[in-house]
Every structure is written in structure tokens, then in C-alpha cells.
Length: 120
Image: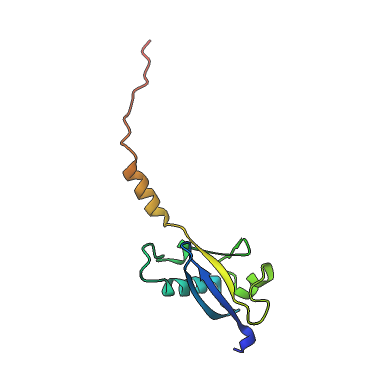
């Protein structure tokens, strides 16, 4: 893998801190990239993601799909087009769905059943 196959990326978290910059192969999938981000996640952050589905990568206003490679994403957006330029991607976390449902169930008061029978 030559130096021309590498793309230099850094990842901006919601609080403004960065992960990287580091060089990644343009043939790496977005899912693999997300796994690396999770592994490099700062230990002092509270809401660290555990699965790649909790992470969204945004570049150029586009959400990158897990099954695409960086070179495929490059055709849609400008990733590392100029040598020596670091591309910044935004990292957005979405909480796992089951946590939302569990939290919603705890916050909702129990429903009372009412009879709406009509006797004629």
C-alpha cells in the first residue's frame, strides 16, 4: 500500500474535541473506520459508543454508509483530494434504540383503563 492510497482524516466529536489526525487506506470501509474510532474514543468521555450503529460519520453534509469504502465515498464528496490536507469528519452519536424504549417506559405513568360501554 503506497502513500497515495492513504487518506489523512481527523474526527470532530460533538464537544469539539478531535480524534486524530491519522492516515487510513482509501479501500477501508466506513464500518471498519467506525470500529477504529470506537477503539480510539477518549476514555474520559461519558457516552462512549459500543457498536458501530451508534456512530454516524458526516462529511460534506453527507452521512457515510457503512458498506461503502472511503474511495467510493470520495466520489460523492471531497475526501483528501489535495495531498497534505487533513479532512475533518464529524462524529454524531445516536443512542441505542433499546435504551430509548426503556427510558420512555420508565418516564410514562401507568395507563388507566376506562370502560366506554354504553348500556341502552
